[in-house]
Image 1: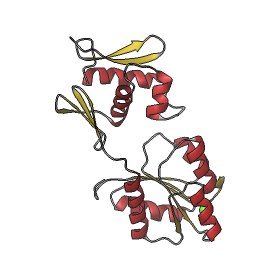
Image 2 (image 1 turned 90 degrees about the horizontal axis):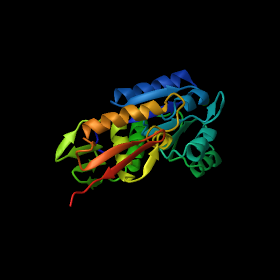
Image 3 (image 1 turned 30 degrees about the vertical axis):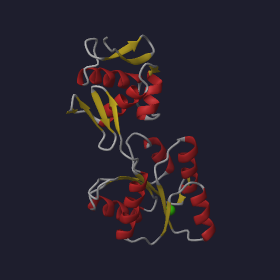
Image 4 (image 1 turned 180 degrees about the vertical axis):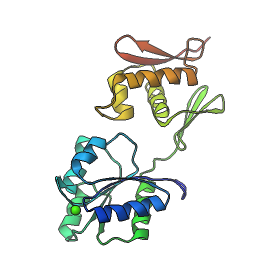
Amino acid sequence: MGDGQMLRVVVLEDESDQAERMSSWIVNAGHHCEVFATIGAFKDAFRKAPVDVIALDWGLQDGTGLEVLKWLRRDASCDVPVIFVTAREAEEDIVTALEAGADDYLVKPVREKEVLARLKALARRAQPESELLEFEPYIFDTGNRQVRYQGQPVRLTEKEYELALFMFRNRGRVLSRQQLLSNVWGTSAELNTRTVDTHASRLRKKLQLSSSGRWKLTSIYQHGYRLDEYVSH
Ligand code: CA
């Protein structure tokens, strides 16, 4: 991750002053920030957009940040880095949070440059090593999340890229729409299986996954999709 990389940060904080201060620091540094005041709102919005770092307050109106952390790690299988930003400074609280899977812990009052540096460090640590995956004639570059077709970059949206990567990684297997939804979009009530169909049909065009090519994306009636490779002999 380069230094100029934009981070997508989610802040769960119920004190509006503190939330606004954090948010303006993050936004002014060129990052994206979404603030939630309650656990309910946070959970509702969760997974609609990809996130690089989550900052959690401890005491919230409808529960604790610790519960949110446990929910993230256990129920949502989410391994996005989490930093606590809280007034609780007892050693046992800090240890409890870290043992529950928090990646960092800051005691209020927090300072602008330190918050930004810690958010960046967390995101950088979580960044997976980039690799090149070759499915001839396609190359997936997981570092810049790009697909090249015969050496030329193909313009894909974020979800189209993820869907394509998931399908290529699972080539030859029948994948249900539900499976694709949960792996690419995460579980969200607002999405339906039509989303998968729209994206699949765009991928078919953009990556030329039609009968004439080496790779073919087949619809499996009332079920989902299968991506197959045809090698001519
Ligand atoms: Ca609070």
